[in-house]
Image (tube, rainbow, N blue to C red; front, side, top):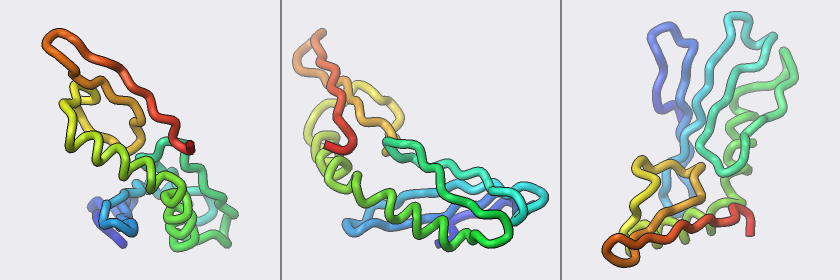
Length: 121
C-alpha cells in the first residue's frame, strides 16, 4: 500500500486499488511528535476525508481501512464519470481529479454545457 515516501520519512503516499482497478491515493504528513499527534491526511474524494485519530492508539493501517471504506460510496459516480470522460469532449477540468464532480462539456462549436454531479446520489 505504500506508494511513495520522502527522504525525511515525514510524508507518505498510500495507494488503494478499488474493485475496478482505479488507484486512489492518501497523502499523509507525519508531525514530529507522531503518534502522539494526528498526522495530516489529504485525499482526492468528493467529500472531506477526516479520519478518527486517537493519540497513541490509532494506527495508519486503521486510517487506511477507513479510507477504503470512504471510497466505496463513490464507486458508481466514478464509473459514470470515467465513461463520460472517455466519450465526450471535456473542456474543464483541465487536470483530472477524483474529487471534482463537475464537467464543462463541448456540445457544438462555441457552445458548451456545465454539469455538476451529486457525489452520493
